Each structure stands twice: as structure tokens, then as C-alpha cells.
Length: 254
Image (tube, rainbow, N blue to C red; front, side, top):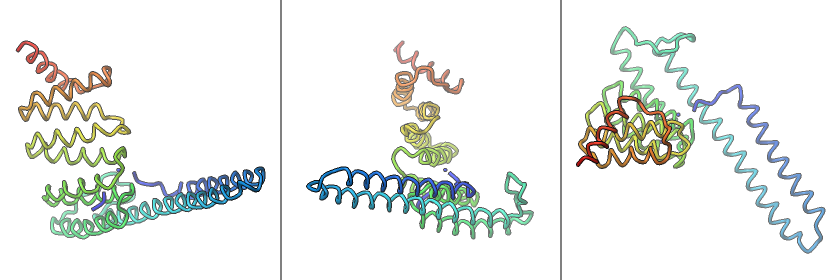
């Protein structure tokens, strides 16, 4: 299952217009190049035109796919909020008074979010749909299913996609709540390895903390020392850094 960035619908026409401008500009530049060059290289120019056309189509198709995914996600989110009794001004979705109603709504919309995630696998909208599906699995008491949904979605995204980090953080949180410290540390570490994620060093510090909780001091210190090498000025939670410094000092004394 594919599985966060909610597209702003009011910006979609501008985004599409920008894509069309890029396509038109590319075509203009290719045309000028062909006119300015002699006949013997027109064959090369023809090849470039074919490539440019393919590039233009790819741009247009990618933009269309993103818009479709965002629209599908937004529609299901809006329906879910209404089904749960949320008003437009509610920031937090309220819990229905009847627990059975809440369960049925979650089961129904879990399926709908999962369908969006599958249909738009590998896109931001698909990843966010998987994030929602996993959250509903968790709310229904199925933590393992939530982890599976988020992990599968993360694997469909690019290796440096920041949304992948957010999915891994949710995985880490579930493992940590269950006391699976090594698994939690590994999920935090995967998030930390994503260069585009702005809080990557904080995630690595959390990985180190979890490894320490698991009794894997070597792995905890390796993560901490990596932070010190890559970003000595990185802000780390005080309690986490204090614990890691203690471990570092104890290791040196031994």
C-alpha cells in the first residue's frame, strides 16, 4: 500500500500554468536552435525535438497525477470529517458520542483512504492517504497494521523524500510505545538518513536514545558520534544529549 503534503487546491491552476510555460519555453528554444544551425545537423535537432516532446509530456503527466492524488485525498478527508461530526471550523476531529458509530466510520474510511493510497502510489497524496489509513488502523487498536501501512508507503517514495521521514517517525512511535526499542531506533535512523528532512539530527538523537534503552550502547554512541561529526551545533533534546554524554564518558573511562 502506498502512503506527508496536502496540496492546496487554489494553487493548482497556477502550478499547471507554470508547467505549460516550461513546456512552451522548451519548444521555443528548440525551434530557435534548429533555425540557427545548418542542414547537416537537423537530424540531431530532430532527435532533440523528440526528446523535448517526451520531457514535456512527462512534466504534464506528473503534474496531472499530483493534482488527481491531492483531489482524491481531499475529498475523502472532507467526507471523513463530516462523518465524524466535525464542523468546518474544527481543527481536531471530534469523537462521536456513540463508540460503535466511531468504529464503523473509521472502518469505512480506512478502506477509502487505503484505496486512494493504492491508486496514487508513490505520490505525496498517496503517501498522505496511507498516513491517514495507518492512523485509523491505530485508532482501531491495530498497531501492527498501522506500521505495515506506513512502512509500505515509505518504500514507494523516493529515497530522499521528506514525507518518507514522517512515515518512519510514525513507525518509530508505535515501536517505542510497545517497548520495541531496537525497532524504534532503526525507524528513527531511517528518518535521519533522509537528507531533505530538516529535523534529521533530532531523529538520529532519538535513534541513539532508543538503542541505549535497548542496551545497545555501541550503536547508540555510533549514532551520537555521527551527529557530532555532521552537525556539532545541532539542537538535541537536553535529556537525550545528557544521557548520551553519560554513555560516552562511561565508555571512555572503561
